[in-house]
Amino acid sequence: MEPRYDLHIHSALSDGTQCLEELVPLVARAGLAGFALTDHDTTAGWAQAAALAGEYGLDFVPGAEFSCRYVYGTDSGSASKTIHLLAYGFDPVTSELARQVERIRASRQGRAQAMVERLAADFPITWDQVTAQAGAGNQAIGRPHIADALVALGAVPDRSAAFERLLYTGSKYYVPQLALDPVDAVRLVRAAGGVPVIAHPMSRMRGPALSLEYLEQLVAAGLGGIEVFHRENGATDRERLLDFVRGYPHLLVTGSSDYHGAGKPNELGENTTSTSTVAALREQCI
Ligand code: AMP
Ligand code: FE
Ligand code: FE
Ligand code: ZN
Image (cartoon, rainbow, N blue to C red; front, side, top):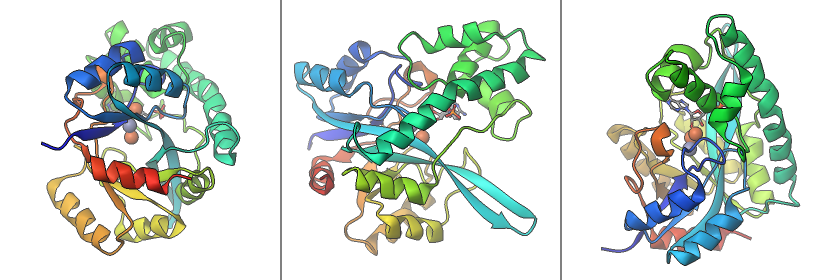
């Protein structure tokens, strides 16, 4: 079989549960040719991941995942939807994207603290417990680490239950995170020389699936690919996405696990991307 890539993996630098020294050997053991590290809002793992990839004979694609917020009008006012944008091969230092992401990353702590304050009214949770769960080098503290602290307290059995019962968007404990508009984010990734790929577009975990009309707007802004093969896109939705892509020959179709270690049930390599797609993705990087 042709060697394949897993283009969506999180480490403990964001909300995965394994550090890179633990993670990269597991990627090799999964039989993959290469992988992308796509931690939330940080590129801090790129250098070490590239070095470890070399040691284990893996091809490394640098990436990140950005939480964006799409605000739209409704009959009764406005509503919003969180959209995750993957980005590969962008300039992580001097670009406007890097500047914006740094601003968002820096705001994470205050936002997470605000959620902990709300939770502390009902649970014996402290900020120290959350930072302990996130770990010393964490770059993107957020709800997953609050979830882990709630699990440690015995308030919920696992991360998924913490999200379902307490941390979901709209819960009384929820405080929104600063986020880019998705169209702006697509443009910023391109301006930074990278390739923007929409993550799990038909997932219904964060509200309704993305409409194809809105996907068209992202394509017009410069979207480079769609993560079609992801466990949160159902079979019918995958068919709809593949039909959509036929209208745009430059759009890449990717597949990936969205691995978070013990933080989610997703397994390394459960969905993958072809070598030729990775080559085409690299060609789009400046
Ligand atoms: P935050 O960026 O702090 O709002 O946290 C959002 C992150 O939490 C996402 O990127 C997911 O990785 C994770 N997450 C969201 N929903 C769930 C869930 N139901 N179970 C486990 N992790 C989740
Ligand atoms: Fe995550
Ligand atoms: Fe995501
Ligand atoms: Zn992810």
